[in-house]
Length: 283
Image (spheres, rainbow, N blue to C red):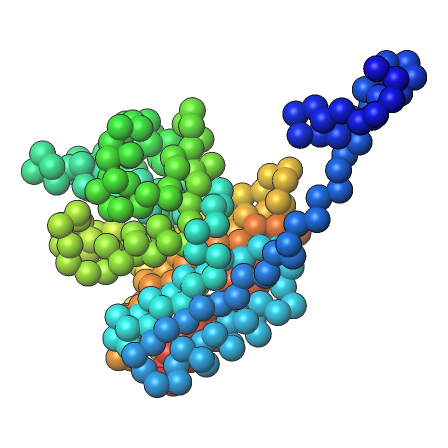
């Protein structure tokens, strides 16, 4: 074959005199992907438009890829941005690990052991990795996947080979978890929910950044953050939080990657959190 163009497995290949097929990479012309925009709905007049505008403005100059979720029961307000995009969980998954432990204990009608309580407290309040690895291994993949199924967290993919920090999470599923923690449901007992929120309310001060930023006084805070640097997509910096008071009852998730530093990611999250707290407080 010395002339002509042959199609090989969808790649154009030109036949040259030597008989060697030289691939010609066809220049793809994909339709310009629209940048995702913030979507908000609310039962409160004007609130959705204000949140949409303010969240977009908070992110306008920020680099990296950011996903946002907000749900306020009091005004039936929901905001989302990249709700189904997957992120490496880092330590945010620790709230799911504790929820799984309590869900499993409930099935056999038992209390957590002293050892489990100690590990759970270290895992949530100090983000202790060794405690997390111990509980992750104790639970095993069957129980973890069982909880995710019971919770309807169908987009969450547990990290393989003990790498819990590489669990794939989305805003949609983190919001589902936060909603389970903050309202009566059949998955977690009231005592379990109260226990998780109590520990998330006792996180050490150095780890209370992120979604609690700008929270009005008198509003209770429960938070779990995560941060992880990898060779691709830079720093993953995430924050999930539950807030109650001032006539509102809301949960918030902000997931980010592509951050140059951990602090850059924190600043991005806090810019979003600040306007959300402010807009809800004013509504």
